[in-house]
Length: 265
Image (cartoon, rainbow, N blue to C red; front, side, top):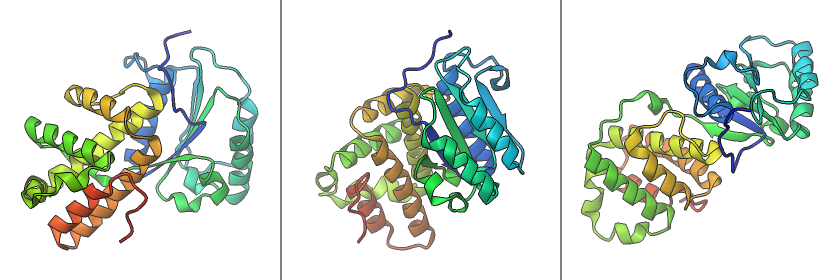
């Protein structure tokens, strides 16, 4: 058996929502990280413990076939990964068949569902998956200078620890992020996605080397659910900034409540 990542917080099912090509790219990265984190040369399709369903229309018979095949044990890894590219386009009867396989899967099975609109999936399916919402900003080029990203990591660490109020005793602290909102939002999104990946598979499939140590350190202090919530908060912040509201106030609110459920105000 080849080396497999240490999977401390691996879920039995992931639901990755975002633009189809972006979500699928991240789904495939996650699959590789679960199965062969140290092997980037072998095509994912060549891994015998990986099964991808790329069809836009998936009949219920295929879902039942996948469900029946779940009980085949892994051949090369500690896990088998089943990837559905168009989970949100499944008909209701196919979703019901899929639901049965999500309720009590074997311990070595990991489902990855890709959706552009996860609301099209049954609530019972959504509740059994770990949701990863991907932002459009993942396509943006990150252009913060190294010293700016270093400062951003320190700010994120304090914010996650609930120490944002101390940081913002002086309003000028916000100036760099207000002035470079696009670059900062892109950097935060990338950092949070790297953290999400590390939390799931204890490895980085494709992260900037200079960022790995910081992400790893942050992951020791922040829970998976906090990271997911922070991603949602980043999306909310993006929407607020797009309509030109008071930018310093929006940034301050974001950093003061990062990763906390007490954000509605």
